[in-house]
Length: 99
Image 1 (cartoon, rainbow, N blue to C red):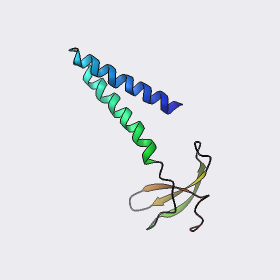
Image 2 (tube, rainbow, N blue to C red):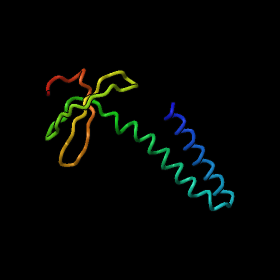
Image 3 (cartoon, rainbow, N blue to C red):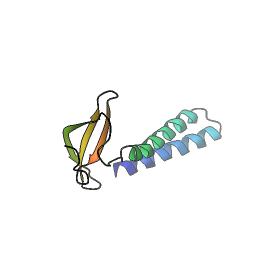
Image 4 (tube, rainbow, N blue to C red):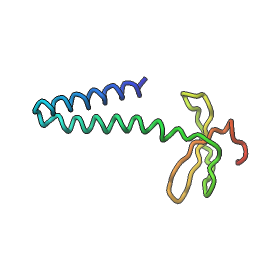
């Protein structure tokens, strides 16, 4: 619900900014840019953090951190890569191959 509200506000901000800019108000351009950035970031966030898959290969370390994904109801375990600081979210109901 919050995501939908953010998408609506971002789209309205981008459209309103473009409309204002097109009608000769230069203040509309920053609003259009920020609305577009917020819209793209919100859409990208869902794709980026939806990588719940098998245990990652390489120098990944399993952490004790686990949480229930509110959309799927599955328990995800957090894996950490110490060199880059990246985190992966692995569905632990599907993968039992690593501790």
